[in-house]
Length: 488
Ligand code: NDP
Image: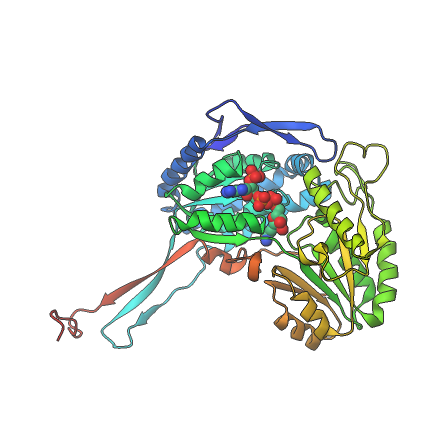
């Protein structure tokens, strides 16, 4: 598969390629060009040229194109979802959901653009008035991770295009294909060629060019916190605008009055969807003492029913871990916890079984008696392993939940809304879900506290991150002349 530059399939300068592996079988699905800095520059120039056209279009035209993109993407859902499962590993049903969520995001911003309101405000001194104007930024570099390659591209390009910006997308090297296909469909739907370009290649090459190049006004990044720190450093040279969506170690608190059956489902959904590889996966579970035994028993039963397999097979609940490296990281966190005294309530490990030999499969692990000093309690565990902690009350749960350098998501499960509100105010996280697993919605702002990043995606706030705010100050003729020079 080729890259997409100026609306056309494009080869890289050299002939090197990056093979794309299927995490379920280890087989090569296809390959993409190994782009260079020169390829990235070509795409940046195409995006800069397209900006002059796209940003001048009336908002109603940008809105129509975004609605059309959503329609075209939805009508290609099966082909896109299949490619996503083949390159990423998630079950086909989850892939369909991800493609549809890309379309939802486009529709949300297509509906929003052109409906914002501004105001003309008189100066407090009465000599004139000012207008606050929003202007697009220019070319945006969107750097994407592999866990939700398509929906996270939507979180960036949909508000960014709605506001009049253009893009160079740098997908993760292990999941470039569906993004290229979606970008190709965007052009078919009427997007100005060059308004979204996709350049494949190593982050350290293509990504670094996006950081270095003065023609790129903003970097919108989702990925690991350590990479986010590098993105901040690299963007400092030209003071680029930044949105950083980084890692998380999300706590889920189950109170003694919670609907336990619902909370058990929520914990399973929250931890094991996408094989535990969501930024807002439930990564630490806090149970009130009073319900801990009952919850643990029901949860263990539930987890044992999770069917592991190839995401292409009907009936698969959980696919493989995305890469071998990622699988080893999760295993080493489980080992570390056990070496510190944790017990396996549900025993994980590499599953046996026909068809599972060559994939990066890992069964769900649930740990109890976990020390707060264990890696799995302190760092982000990006895979199907969950530590359980028992707490005496809400205050202890909140204190423990906040004892992390991350602050992306969190949840509290209770029938008492006063209790829920109390927890939501105090939990240091960009989102608190109440009686709900972590589901991002186009209309709700999403982002992190602390080292989980800054800026917000989605919602009206997400649109604002693709604008510069400028003021126009107008002095009315004949109204005072207090600014004569020299100043007396
Ligand atoms: P990485 O940070 O490794 O990679 C993310 C992207 O950055 C990839 O496209 C990568 O390219 C690129 N990149 C790597 N180095 C550089 C560089 N020096 N300059 C510019 N770009 C670079 O993250 P993962 O893909 O491994 O994603 C998993 C992580 O992302 C998890 O920690 C997870 O929590 C977090 N995440 C956070 C989310 C949020 O919304 N807060 C959502 C999803 C994930 P290449 O692939 O070529 O290396």
